Image (cartoon, rainbow, N blue to C red):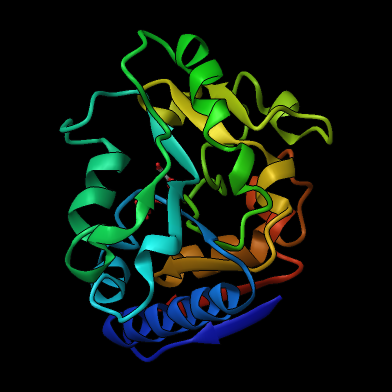
Length: 223
Ligand SMILES: O=C(O)[C@H](O)[C@@H](O)[C@H](O)[C@H](O)COP(=O)(O)O
């Protein structure tokens, strides 16, 4: 694991946006498109805003979430809405969004149609992950109902997930798909998450799902 510490959150957003843009540009030099997989939640907003103004051949960048809360677009907890308002604006408006939610009643009902969109997107070219205080990443929550399936080596691309800490039902990319990314970055902020991440490194991924992705990752942190 490579750990990068920034003096403050503004420097982190600028440094991380620069790093992600560089990785996407490199990928586009040799591939016809780049698959860019990003977290929802509150941490990446500033990074996304900076990235959206970067000069890049965005129409060849395919963006999708690590995971989504099963709520309609426009809902206050919709990661898709967050993505559309922070990343997919300005120059990045031309990027292609691969949907992670549809209007089915449950993730189980919606997943078959969603999975079809992921065929051309794997392996992920550039992966950004967040982490919760309980060591979850994407919607791989410790103790979640289908964690074992989602962490297994023959897991499907998408897994429905319900967990006490999750709020609403979720859909998440499985460990197999996330761990197959060509390049992985992790974004965390604050002393508490830094300590949690250190602890996670010593635990089994079933207890600390973020641990499954740290070995080859670059972690970006600011106080
Ligand atoms: O939909 C989600 O909740 C995310 O994809 C999730 O995995 C997130 O990255 C972490 O929970 C950290 O969230 P914060 O950035 O809000 O702390």
